[in-house]
Length: 331
Image (cartoon, rainbow, N blue to C red; front, side, top):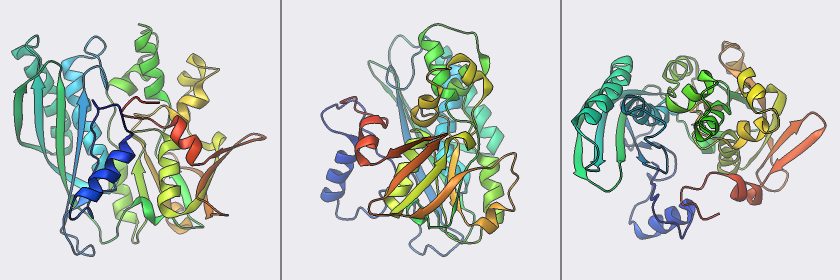
């Protein structure tokens, strides 16, 4: 389960997590974005739980999003973590810390957005909390049911696996850049940022096809970020062909000089990145699941190698540390 402490800026998230693990008597459930709550990992009756927080002026600005859009996004980003473990979403709890400048209409519109996503995926709101605050804070806990007898973890990538993504990358970061410039010229990119959708349907497809352990996570912090995390946790080399990564024509057109960086490091696309056996990949719809590379045995250390025409980019720990999203803003 992710633990975010966004307002403190003196340490990186990974360092805080290591500190937390050392303090807790049992930290076995901390690591992946969802925690599995049944000790017997082979049973098909366990629950997954995840929690994410959104902070005003860190993750969103009320000047660029409506309460309705914010309600939708707040739920979707949590359901994305459940999609990344092929869990069936069941319940959410919603906690809001509201500043005095926001009124009842804001709450009503926010929950209209929450309700739309919940109805779409048959999820029930099971409570939460309301408090006062200087800024708007949103924290949602999502609970889902395990749907298969396999286990999904960042640690499960194996040499020979096919690396697959479920859709375009860079659109959300492009939309954010446009909003920051008050440029409303591309609805697709702006919508990708303000109203992302969790890949629940594609997760269901995978749950019906896969019959063995595999690696998967969402790309909420960026495609390159997710690639490196799987490579690191699985101890493998991830070889990727940049030209195979789905990129929208709108992103190429609006950001001809920077779209490649947005694709790799932009974040908040909430697509799925998975590593599966070739025989499983053959069964997938190639219009929805896109092969971008293969998993290889690591030469020495786990890394990501991205081939871009004749240029080879390597993402090792140093590159990852410099370019990946940092919740604490100290780099």
